[in-house]
Length: 347
Image 1 (tube, rainbow, N blue to C red):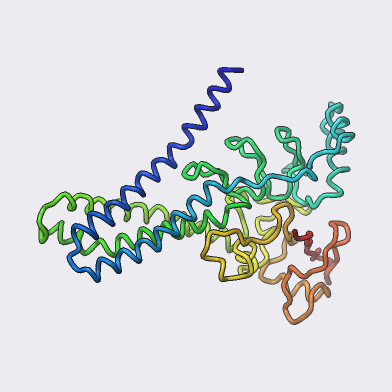
Image 2 (image 1 turned 135 degrees about the vertical axis):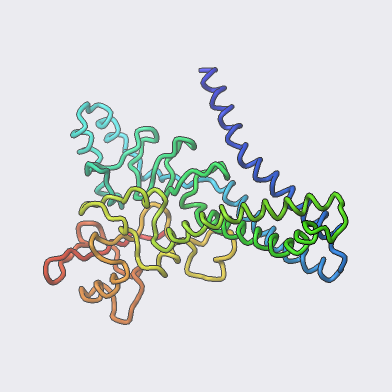
């Protein structure tokens, strides 16, 4: 037991190395920009002050969102998704997978769980001993089930999921803007040093490397930011982008998509004034999500619901659809196509 515990402790320490690396690079970039560029290189006070104000604005937002992503504890399933004592004992006694599934199905009837495994079974975590809510996955690094898990990011040493996905997207956005500010303001002096229009001082190498590092980080981060903005618009996680969630009707990569505007609101909230700040403003509780049935284009969801009398014709949001269980939320459209939307209770 002791060697195993020691190995786990060493692993946890080593997991902080990428975070330490990022903070060292950011710390050096702060010194290079503020001291070597603004204090020692820029001769004009007005230019120096304006650069410092803009730089610190984006630097502050970048650091705020980055550390919010790191320190936000991943949201885990509530006790409601754990098996009751009697069912748990029955589950552990059963040897056959079919019998165990019957126990899980009995408990899942009272839970807002609509996704299944590839084989159609109830998703259950043997390690955490809970029925997995929709979009929940077990992280082997964090050793826990994470609600609406996107991925485990080594650069923040944390799982990115329901509790901090907005912070992660803002971290990427402000990191990109941070690099843009550095490159756009440093390039003039970068060229002057490179063409030897300024005297060779210790500031020269800091400014040259500052531009190169910021440019390289910008190229790598902007691609990742673009990908996650695309995921937000589609209301998918990284896991769902690679493996479509499976519903009773089959796999559906757009199973949680409600249209672009509603997808953005689910992550950033319905009050735009909070979108740019790393404070939690997402909708829902992470345990249940508005879902749509397979074969219905999310952009046509409102019109489909209007045709079936689910929402008023004036375009009221999907979130106002009356709540109900999986059994009583299904209707048939003209032609026999299944066209229902399930809305689970909000916190």
